Image 1 (cartoon, rainbow, N blue to C red):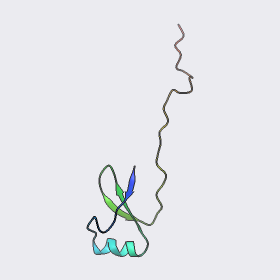
Image 2 (cartoon, helix red, strand yellow):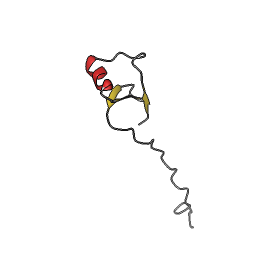
Image 3 (cartoon, rainbow, N blue to C red):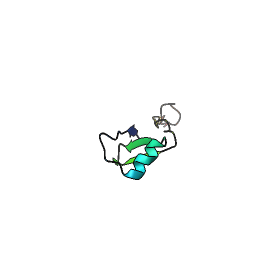
Length: 63
């Protein structure tokens, strides 16, 4: 999941969301579903899937 930050100047936030932001919550936006939310937890690092079959094991066909 890719998360980006959003600002109050660009998006409408309810009174409860603004209160949480003043208390130190982080504003996050999901890039896939475009949902804005706030969280006190830090963002995890991005997931980078590795390509399968790069080790060469099992990729050979023996006749």
